[in-house]
Picture (cartoon, rainbow, N blue to C red):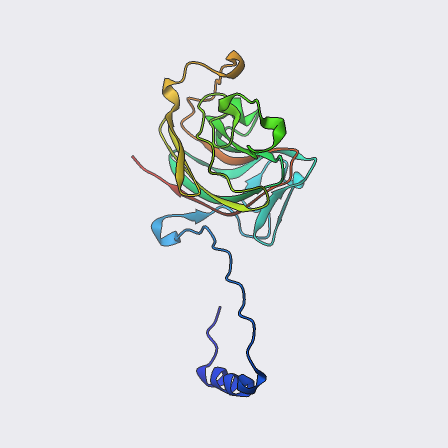
Length: 227
């Protein structure tokens, strides 16, 4: 935002000096942002589906937020593909919300199986999820590797998450706590004994996997890594 002229600011302050005290504005909610100088690139322009493909009609893209429409879903994904990367983002769950991050998604099929994995995005606290397999909770590489629980903010609040993918390894940091740090190459047991044929993928799209719940994302950035 351009800085105001100091002279005008001073005159404004003098004109308001006799108006009495005012209530200070509430501090802005901190945003999870990235510096493009550090190699991070935005995945969302804040107002359109530019750069994304898939069932984009099932999502809204405005006011700096990508949101899955309630009752809709499907996997939307970046037009660009990535190998190794760090992605940072913020997400907000509705009560009982269920979504996912599609990692190295090929552009077809169920992201949890056709891609390297789907990182679960889930309101763990909802009663309907009380008896899930540990590999189905938030931050888990769905069906393969369980994430640590207890670091999600309540439904309706924004969470900050960082995902680092290098080779066959995935690291997930949620609200400052590392909840998953695993090497999928070593996984040989699966939820419901259902194999994940895509787990060995070395490149693919980054996506959001909707499952019919209202889940929102903002401040999405990605940084490609080289080895």
